[in-house]
Length: 295
Length: 276
Image (cartoon, rainbow over all chains, first blue to last red; front, side):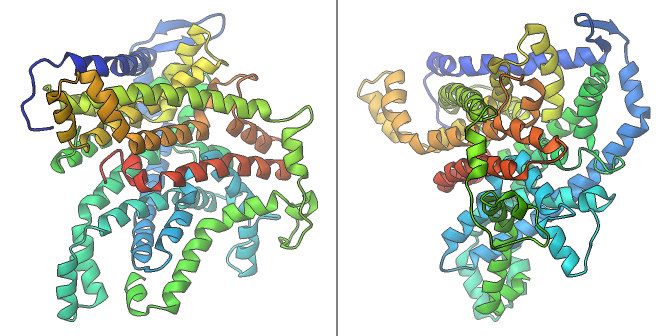
């Protein structure tokens, strides 16, 4: 919002916006309506596309399917673990990098590298580092006597591993965001606290963290939106196994759609996922509005 | 832990930095290093540090009947074209959106961000059906459209945020001097937007280049991208680790370099303009 009155004629601005917005409307509303329609039908792929309308059957199934329910529970565990650990680790990394005087830039650049790595390759790295016969990390864990089983092939450790891989890839993003927030912590208040003999603990919890709360919120929402958006890491490492212990909802959805080709039901499951992401997107807009940043 | 970093500065802080860098970099370094190992050394147990470096895995990637050039070309085509379309349209729309005064801008913002954030697993389902109907499965066009579904809203949103930050005085001065709105955009706004456009372009390209879910569903034998080639090698029995690690290195290194090129604007880009 510019806050300044402009000329009433805005034809130019509209003309600039329309190509992108028309294309965006086409690639968002057509799939959305297709999806809603699919969720009310049984989609038949063999012998040309055909739809038989079945009303709310898919939706009824959705609420009684124990597989979907257990996937949602796993999704919540996965989501809380990924986002929670990333927030804590990312903030710790940011505080550490912020405390550096020399080499801060180099260290930050090196720390950011995992963000640019394709999820498939993160999955590949997971398989490679955790391989039970030659993986470097498996070997290290066995040498120090912590664990010597097949990490990706065991219920429990497999979930820990996929959470760990996500944390590895995306904590740097939290660190980067928090670091931007730390630059705005009021220096004079910190100095005053120092003069008064405040401990670092005190400064951290009473000055630094409170003043970066808004930015922590942005970081939390950004990661919340992406945490279940991507699923390639799990796809590559465990594909939902062992014994469905990492089958979070996107993996389950993909299975329903492209292993069992039950596309109508998959659309219903997909729409529930969409509701989740829309709620978070809405929160994000609210936060931006409060910061006076939205569009 | 951080209470310590401040109080027990010096050695302990250095130790923590070393631990952080080890956590971050060991897997990447180990991948790159191992891609130069002979096969036996890659799967040696305990892991071997000393080996005679070899380029055989890279040679296997880019020569012979099974080479990966066509995967690289496919990746470049789909990531490149979707990025160019997203950034071109997104830059225009971003300028318009940041300058226009209309009611309901917040609804517009909400719509755009929702499209960007829609879960890929959910988007794949209707797109699959549409592409099947339109015979776009296995084509470059299908993948480009799929990538536009996240890159176009991203580019519109981010360019709007960048244009919002541009001071208006210069544009107003140009308008007073009699320049048309298009001239103001083209000769004044755009040249000042180089960092914003570069950041948006690089991030769009990385998102598309790194995609796996869309490509594994929509690509055909002729249009497979490199991540798909990597995934296929991984699901075979008797994994060719040397080749895989070489692919990993080829996929990762250029993106890490591109990403770090725009490090100064990364935080703006990756938070969709919420953090400057």
